[in-house]
Image (cartoon, rainbow over all chains, first blue to last red; front, top):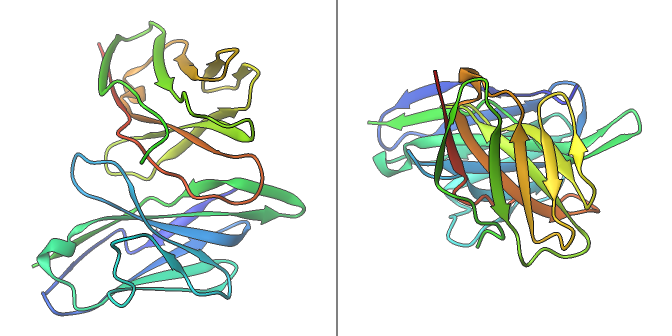
Length: 119
Length: 111
């Protein structure tokens, strides 16, 4: 149990376009989802926390108008990188925590990541 | 800032035990110690967690000092597939709480 998927696994786009990344919890209800960004040879940096049905809470320094997060259901959250530029090229990882038939998962389960390259 | 500090890198011979230390001297009484690992270009994988007692599962053992200010993750028989970056994280015992990742330890298992 506690499987998280991401789509796409990689994407290449032109500068100025918008890219949407999906994060799905496959076998549990994800009441909270997290989005991270990771640059080469660096650690994961938390971008935002989203609770189902609520607005996301962004970390300091993360532009909420550039990184749009939607968590409209208990199994799906999306991150949209608007007007992407080369400096937005990175590895984006989501994680989820929640519950499955009465079992509460306070720990986070991570997706496989999405590699974004902006040309 | 991350609440944990780890050595940046370690090597271990294949088949030997890998002991990865973590310092969390400011840990609170209501915080767990969690360990994850990240194999290149993948999402982090949960390994084990503990509060104050030592824990063991099919992947690893976790030894937490009595004062809870440090812990050690033990991979009893390291294999080449255990080569990864290992992260030690502290989080509250209740509710959903964000993780703050430190720099982790890059473990290289040598043949």
